[in-house]
Structures are given as structure tokens and as C-alpha cells.
Image 1 (cartoon, rainbow, N blue to C red):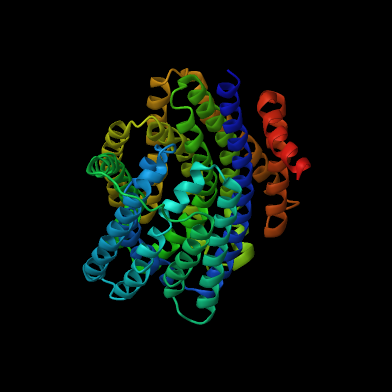
Image 2: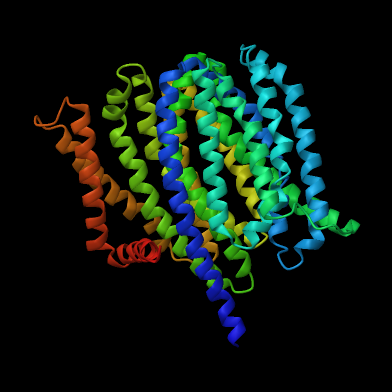
Length: 491
């Protein structure tokens, strides 16, 4: 009995510790990304941002093939992973090489499609990193299975910092949009070398045909889901590339990168922590659902204020830093910062489906999401060009990811009121806090002074949001304080 109860406890502690490590990494990465974005906005032109945004519509979708879904399937086989590693490694490498050559072939067609010959070189430069990064897939899965999130946080931070530093250096050297593309391969080599040093790419051994059939079967479903997700992630750029100038795409690309950072860093890292824990609890559905509910609630209360504060600071902040140069991007930053946080919870519910091996169900949801997204974005583009696309993207994330999460959670026995809380209480508190800050910033005492407006909005939000949390959701306030405060005191 002791061993049975201690294991989940150990998993819970590892997950909590991992979450805190990765949140710290997210905050650090957010700071680095923010500073990098500011520097690059001074060094590069909107056309450079537009060019890389269009190039990524090809490379990001192709790069979803890197793991071929094998990483999630392999993580399900933690107890017998050594028997699956050789096959998984060579399958990942083989598929990534195919993906690289596919990008080489697609590059001229993409350049013709977007009427931008410069895309060929950008796509080729990014494509070269695909097999280099794939070499570290199995090592990364092994480290996740060990729940060594401290190492993963350090590795992720290094990768982000290295990418940003190299991009800035190359931009300062006058390489234009290639400043974004060239660092991918350099950082991929360094990242893979570090992962190999921590965990060998695979243990030598033989594999059976049945293993290949199993990996291919489940991995294909994951691949289809990931491909749909990437087509959604790049769909707004694909549409914009057909209807807007490269400069306008650059403003939108700048705005989306700015708006998406809190969601992708917090939600991505939380899901990376939660998924290995959920696989441990696969035979204990009650513990599994409890872990999901706690993670969703915590993520909701963290991501919403970050994004809404970002929306509130967009106009005075960008004007303070860049004057009029990037002001056309402000409406897109505001709209996307309000819509994107509603996508965060779906990262956790998606991890739950994977942990339960419900790959077919996950794939079905993505098959619904893909046409829905393109229909909405197409209508938005038809009605109001780029602004219509931004509004359509925000409305999509407001509607579909919560609906999908609702279906997953309700199916797992979670009450509707609990799911609704993940979204609407954080939304209400964030609106009140940021709204109060913006209202005060518009008074005659502060209005017209960009720096003072930013300070007022930031201070009011950072004081009022925790206060609302402490009064109306004291247990959530205590959990956040205990998790972060207790961990920091130990350090």
C-alpha cells in the first residue's frame, strides 16, 4: 500500500516543482522575447516581418512532421521506453529529412503563390534545421518521462535566448528577414548536443514489426491533429499573404508575436508538465481529472490578466517605444490579446486526450476546427481585410477552444460551472483590473504622457487583480501564493 500511495505523491510533487520551474522559465523567456521584439522592431522593417511570416506558413506546417507524433506515443511507453527508442529515433529522423526536402520543393511554389521571390531562400534556410532538431526528439521525451523539468526549463530558456540573440546580431549586420531564418539551424545543433549529453538518443537494441505498426498507427492520428493545428496557426498568414501587402502582413505578424507570447509560453509549459503526470495517472481517472482541473484553473487565472494587461498597454507602450512607426499594429495587438487567452485551457484538455490515448477523438475535433477557422477568417478578410482577419481570429479562439474543452471536460464528469470558472471569473477580474487602470490613465493627470499611462495601467492591474482574487477566490489566491512563495522561500 505504501508504494502505491507514494508514487502518485511523488508525481504530484514533481509536477508542481516542474510547473514552477517552467513558469519561471516562461517569465524569463517573456522578458527576453519582449526585449528582443523591441530591438528587432528598431532594426528591421515591417516588410522583413512580413517576409518571415509568409515563409513560416510553409516551414511551420512542415516542421509539425518532425516528431510525426512519435514523442507523445513514446511517452505513453515509459516503463518499456528503451525497447521503443531505436525505432522512434530513426523514424523521427527519416520523416524530418523527408519534410526538409518537401520544403525545398514547395519553396518556389510558395514564392509564386505570395508573389515574393525572396521566400525561396528563407524557406530553405529554415528547412535545414528540421532534421537537426529531430535528432533530439527522443532524448527530450526521455527527459520529460523522468520529469526533470528543471533541466527542460534551462534548455528551453537557452534555446529562446540563443535564438533571440542570434537574430538581433544578424539583424544588426543587415541580413533583413534572414536574421529570423539562419539561427534556427545553429540553435538546433546546440540544443540537440545538450539533450544528447543529458540523455542518449537511444539505447541500442532490436525492434519488432508490431512496434512499427503501433507507432505508425497512433502517430498518424497525432500527425493529422498536429497538421490541422499548424494549418490553423498559419491560416491567417496564408489568407493575408493573398490579400495584403508584405508591409501589412508585417504589422500583423509583429502584433501576433507580441500578443501570443503569454499564452504560448504559459500554456505550452503547463501542458508539458501536466502530460507526463497524466500518463502516470492513466489507471487512476479520478486523480487524472483532479490534476487537469487544478492545472486549468491555475492557468486560467494566470494567463488572462497577462493578456488583458498587454492589450491595455499596447497603445501607450508602443507609442512610447517607437513613436508612430509601429502604431498600425496596435489594433491587432489589442484584438488578438483579448482573443488568444481563451485558447490556453485547450492545451491542457488536449493533453488529457493524449494521455488517455483518445487520438481519434482529438483528431475529430481538429477536423471540425480546421474548416471552421478558414471559413471565419475568409469571411473576415472579405468584410474588412486585415482588421476583419484579426477580429475573426479573436472570435474563433473565443468560441471553439472553450467549446472543445467543455466537451472534453463534461465528458470526463467535470461540472459545467467548474469549466465556466476557468474562463469567466479570470475574464471578469482582468477586465475590472485593466479597465480601472485604463480609466485612471485617461484622466487629465496622466493622459498624453505615454510613460505615466503605462505605469498607471500596470500598477493598478497588479494591485487590483490580486485583491479581487483574494476577496472573491481566496482559495485560488492562497494556492498561487503558496506555490510560488513556498518554492521561492526554499530557493
